Length: 226
Image 1 (cartoon, rainbow, N blue to C red):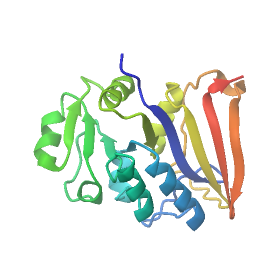
Image 2: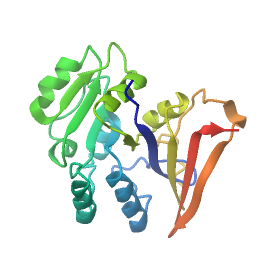
Image 3: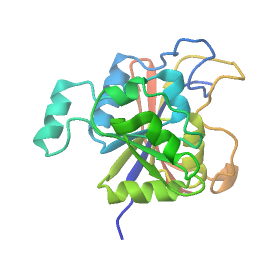
């Protein structure tokens, strides 16, 4: 049986747990040193995944920015850029988003009812795969494993982070906590309400805590609970 990838959730959030505010401009939570750390984590990953909502809201390129890190990937026999992955139930993806026009290969996971819609929209911009009548994260991870993805970095948004945590599919979590308070009820949060494994008294193992300028990086092992 093909092994599923090691799943790492990565997010920057405010002290009160928000990924962004409600303004039209993206709220920059990390500092330059932490953005560079994220670039290193991307370079160490075989694939990077974001949800369609995050793609529409932030319109990211989702790249490894360092020339040296891309060159090292190539020297290691890998593509210069990790595989870029997104998921959509609705199939509402615009072909002019930056995600499709930068970096290397792209992969879309969707469901049976929208797979042809996505293929018609994107053409040869991405490989499009249906995982059945509804989005099943286990099937997504199985397919990524079959494609040789050993390490998957998940960069959001909050709905996807919540699903991975609630289904006990995350092996590691990186949280960069910025010294900001958002306080807007309609702003996106790192995690939403869910029936999390072990309940509210189950403590995850802390792997690391360190300061990166005015940001604090926390690394947790969600599957290791006491």
